[in-house]
Length: 265
Image (tube, rainbow, N blue to C red; front, side):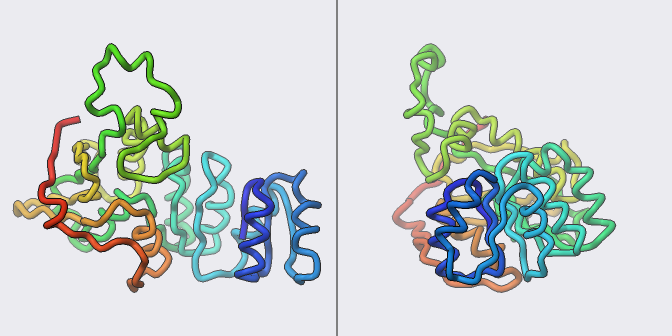
């Protein structure tokens, strides 16, 4: 189990799950974590090298959720031992997609996308007949400023920018969603995750965030994955793949939603 600098939360979770190793990325927090977990017999470590050590431990699955390029080395370490990696860090693919998949092809293993859009595509993509795929359709909510006039954008506050209408996310990804930058990163991510060309990826604004993405096939069929906008669903899918586990996520009620709308980006 690893974390960045929130020692208290990391220690609380460690006491519940009793991992073999707990790593805090911020080296200056080592003594605080050691004090919190004294008497537990849990091994404590800190720093970048320790993160790679954790990724190299034998495990059923590695959840790669370290934000930014900092997550690249631990992810590659896990891939090099042939691990199944649930990838919740799109920056690894955006910055080093070719490198990541070269290592994957060399050492084996599996990458399971955790991003809701790519997880949705993964669930309906026919990998055995990828030549029958016409295109991928990544949906986007449009964020909090979808209908905001351009002349009012200069007065937008940070608080407004992180107030996503559908998803409960961290500040950075909420801002990236508000500017639609996040969708550009997701397009690059999709290119590396699925055997298609860049001109086979489209973006479609879908304000309700119910259809998480779609795959269009050459026979005219379009397969979509639907669900409530709740990250527990794609996370659970990745953690339990190829099985499915019941989650506390609300069940989708299409009658209550009544209508689904779409717009060009």
